[in-house]
Length: 443
Ligand code: UGA
Image (cartoon, rainbow, N blue to C red; front, side):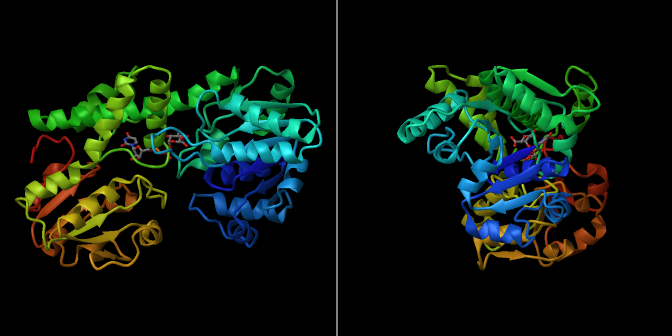
């Protein structure tokens, strides 16, 4: 099939590449000339396992192209995916200006029937707004052309996006048109072989499914963080409690890891946007608001633990920080707990010596050169001359640690572990003070 993808960001790039890999002919269009030039030169702007070689293979095979030429792109595909950003507005609601701009672009250049697919995470009711935007331009052009708008939300996790695309649990399509159903079935047929993954539903249900899935996962995490804090106060170990409750299949082991708060470009934004959408229609989404405020509080926990460990005197201290990315296997630092910690430490007059296997460049991009931030190339170099070690991200490379070595390196024997990576007895037996999340030791 011939397919056009608007937006060569994270979602557009993964979608376009995976659909090309399945044999479709793909044109990806983006307004960012520099990005398009770099992609055409084989440079991939994001770190995502497996993506770069797949882009190269499919470009070489002529199935994947990148362009800024919107007119050509619109007239290329029957399917027109909209995969542009929906940044949060000041009030937390999703800003649809880029989505609606694409809708207008499609309407400006289309010459025949098109299927317009909302892939970006958009609030319930967006498909209607996209249709209205298309209608308006077609009317201005004085032409009558047929089109359909459907919703096809993505469920890709950063760091596992290529795998999620091909092996995802479901493919949701919101539409009531038989023509769209047939086309979407053909589009996804390479990924729908072993068992039926396609779920057709009406467009509003598809739009809400996306938000409900992310909000549910965020709720599980905030719930566990709440219980972890409680466990800490009550002198219980949340890790034992986690095993205890996860064994109940109704609860399950997934997404019940306590930590220093969820980050990334999805959960914080989507929980807020859903709560905002609720309040716009006069509904007070109490649970969603609580999920968000528990998460905000949790992100402050690492700093709070350091403040208490150092008797409120962090001025002049150097803190080693392992993990800048919001989670492992990505270089993404959006809403990462490490950022809140670093910014609080700087305000308190402390210095940060940080290491991350992938996010160094991103960290430098965000914070630039500053005297109170050193980014090291090796994990253990971050310990040099440091007063304490804090772990913000559960990279595999942080799991094996020689605690005697760490004790020897640190000026004060303090480890604050935001991801509960270690066995407390092992750490303590090396003479270190170990402060984890909800592990029976309240600081
Ligand atoms: C999330 C969803 O998992 C995807 O299904 C969805 O498609 C995506 O958002 C999206 O809307 O685009 P992602 O943000 O990449 O994916 O990352 P997750 O792996 O879900 O992790 C989110 C955050 O939750 C991370 O900060 C992680 O550290 C935290 N987390 C996760 C916990 O604190 N505890 C857990 O048990 C699991």
